[in-house]
Length: 220
Image 1 (cartoon, helix red, strand yellow):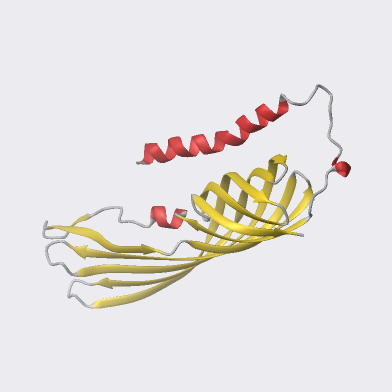
Image 2: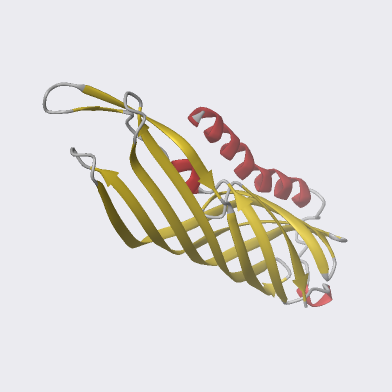
């Protein structure tokens, strides 16, 4: 599975390079496009939904066995894992027809439950709610008619509100909370938008937004 994800990501991030190389062949040597002749909107607001994010991909049990002090091996299993996906809103400001800066805010939730196989009792539960804010940089490498393709990166922070429960050796429930701030990022391999003032888009990448995102945007 890890090899498949690695190959898939390599393919995604090679797309902008291939498209740019193809487009460069259409221009003659020494040609430089004058931005003043290109009609474009400077602002864009959008809503989107994406999954799975890095939170979902990493929210699993690393070790499903445990040996206690008496040498007895206990085995655990995950069940009831749920993930809401990432709902988000954002704003982009176009510096010129091919570069834009933006701000992104997303919310997501994830649940995981773990049972001991022998007793079928819950030994661990985790509920995480994340609030992610990032600054974005995007490069539009293709613009033609109602079509637009871009790639970019995002950096920011994620506030994680975690609620956990564990069972001690006497089967007593131990509640715990772990609120923390984590580094957030996203690498966008390609974002394809179709439309004029109002348009829809699909985005492929890796990070806190999700591998696949889809949404609507308005330019003005």
